[in-house]
Image (tube, rainbow, N blue to C red):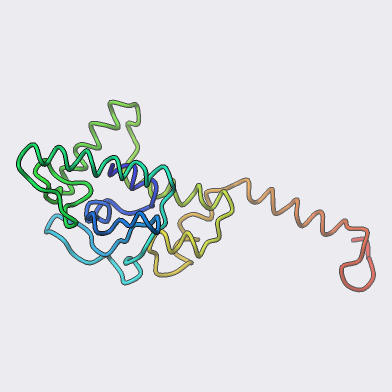
Length: 189
């Protein structure tokens, strides 16, 4: 579930591990990031902008609902009651998962499935790149990632779409070769 949430939200590892069930709102199809799990415990996100609400897609909402039920059943088998404060991605006893333990699991998982060089943080980059490539505006991507400035998002992700330059050339070419004047008279350059 942690991997699904990282890809679906663009959240950082610690932000995903800091999510509790009261962070998830099925009515609004959203998840609220207001803390992160670090090696030294829970703390606030890196910046105030890091506190954010992210809308989730329908398939992720369905998967979360299934996961909540599976987790509750699993924890109950140990006599542990799942509450709204239970981490969505928990350790085997319903507590907060230590980030390095999650990373060790990720290393084993990715190698087993042929993703030897894929870092968990790359899922954050993947989400941002896919959203920008599909034409989602930069402010929306900035807000989903929790960046303080849109320039940070642009600096990190704008250069990863080489096809955009060809698209820009096509747009400017069509404007320069128009038969109708946009303003004033037509001059062939």
